[in-house]
Image 1 (cartoon, helix red, strand yellow):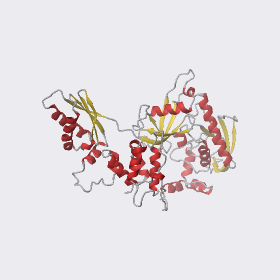
Image 2: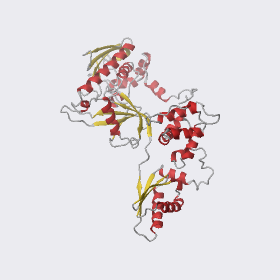
Image 3: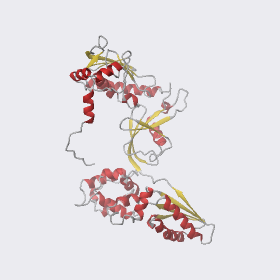
Image 4: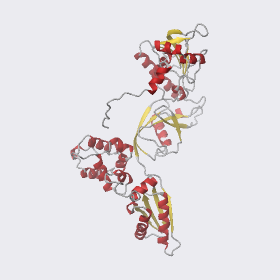
Length: 481
C-alpha cells in the first residue's frame, strides 16, 4: 500500500521526522539519500518548530519532485536505516515483511510491537558499574526473550549503578529479561539487584489543535508536545488572550476553569487538568473548549458583554442576508432580548378541538439570553399561535433539540435563526418526544402528513425515507494533501 501524507500524520510518522531530524544537518542527510533537489528544499526553521518543514517536504514528494518511482516510502526507508531501533520507522519500512517468515516465527521486533505497543523501559542495576560487561550480559539474555539487542542502550554508568534503556518489548519479556540478567550478574554477589522502571511514551508533536474561549473566540495552537497537560493549554490561552479578572468572582478570587473536548456532533467530554494531551487522546485538529465553571451569578461582566455582542452580530448578519427576517432588540449594543419576525409556511392550532390546523405564514419568536449566558443556553418562545409537536401550546417554549441539549458557549446564532425557520416550516421536528402531544399525533396521521407535504414541509414518511435512502454513486476523487 502506498503511504500518503495523511497516513504519515495519522500514524505519527511525520511527528517522528520532526523529533529526530530537528536540525538542518540531519535533515539534509536523509534528503540527500533520496536525491531531493537541494534548490527545492524549504528554508529550515530557526525556531525549533520543524513539523511544518517536514509537512512541506512530504507535500513536494507527493507532488512528484523526486525521480520517477520514488515516493514517501523511500523517505521512510532511509530514516529507518539511519535509526534502526526506531519503532515507528521500523514498522512502516517497505522491507518489513512478515509473510517471508513462518506464522509462529515473527521477528523479535514485530512480536514486541504487537505485545507492547512500543513500550519503553529502564532497567536499573545496583551493585555493578562495569557498563561493558553489563551490556554483554544483556546481549546474551535478550534473544531468549525476543528482545533485539539493537533496542538496548546504555543510559548511565557509575557509582555502582547502571541504567539500560529498552524499547519494543512487552512487560512479560522485560520481566523475564530482568530476572535472567540478575542471575548472570550476581555470580555469587548477592548485592546485585536488577529492577524495571516503566516509562511514559516518548513525547511527539501535535501540529495543530483548536481552542474555543469562553467568549466563543477560536484559537489555533501549533506544534504542541503530547506531554503538555490539558491545564497548561487552558492556562496558556487564558493568559495570552484574556484579562485575568474574567476568571475571578466578585470578590476577586480565582474561579475553576473547565476544559472540554468538543466532538464534531457538538457533544463534549470533560477533561482533567493534569491529563497530558497523549493521555486524553487529543488528535490533530481536535477542538478544546475553555471556560469558567458555570455557577449561579458567577459570570464575569466583561465575558458576558463580549458574548452578548457576538450573539448580536451573528443575528444581525443573518438578517442582512435573509430577506424578510426582521430583528427587534432591547438594546442597540448588547441586547439580551430579541423579537424575531419572519415568514414560513406553517400551521396554527385548530379553531375547534379535533379540527384541522390553520394555515399560517407569519411568525414571531421571542429569544431570551439568560443572566448566566453564555454559560447557559438561550431560550426561545413562540409569540404567534403555532401548532407543532416541539413547541408548548400555552407558553410557546421551543425545544431547541441538539442546539439546546448539547449547548456550548460556541453556539452560532445564525444556525439558531435558521433552526427557528426550519421548525416553523416543518423541515425540522421530532415525533419521538415533544411538548404538544395533540400536534404530535396529528403529525403522524395521514391527514397531517398530506397537509405538511402540501405546504412544502417534510412528512414523517419522507423524513424516514431520506434517512435510509442509499446515497447516489458519485465519481469522487481525493485531492492531494
